[in-house]
Length: 193
Image (cartoon, rainbow, N blue to C red; front, side, top):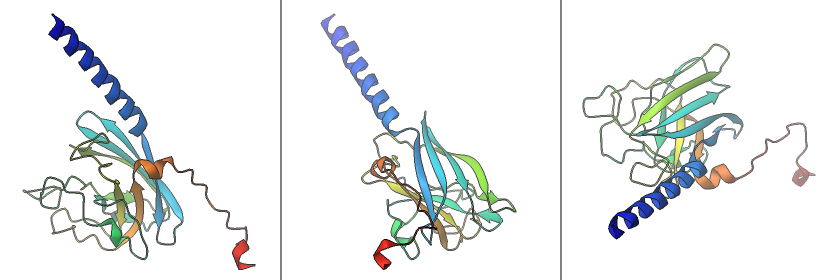
């Protein structure tokens, strides 16, 4: 009987800890920046059972289809966001949603940007999590989300022939906790004066 009570208490504590971690990490909103470091949108990540949903709202892109992926490092350094590394691939799969030995955990469908340069889409990342673990988008320092210049063909290695990295956002707890205020383009830079 004592074992049963101890097990139930331990289970309750575990459930409370997981609930607290989920509240802290989900939803997680990430700002998206272009190569001029202009904020061009957001990606909102929500932890679900056995997956993470991602809502992407972006503006200022060329109309048409663009590849979008989660990348392995929480870095969006200029000039070309290459510091984000390769696609997030903790399972060692091949690239592409259509590849028989794929996909990478960070592979998502293409986004379609409307004629006005905007997109508002929601995708799922099956197997991903915002909680601790090998498939966590917040492991170590985190990961990043990249929107590419061209459409991902869904099969070419290593990244679907999607072209240049146009937009980047850092997926991390420390980034989401920072209060970032947009700059006012009408203000002059006091350091220049």
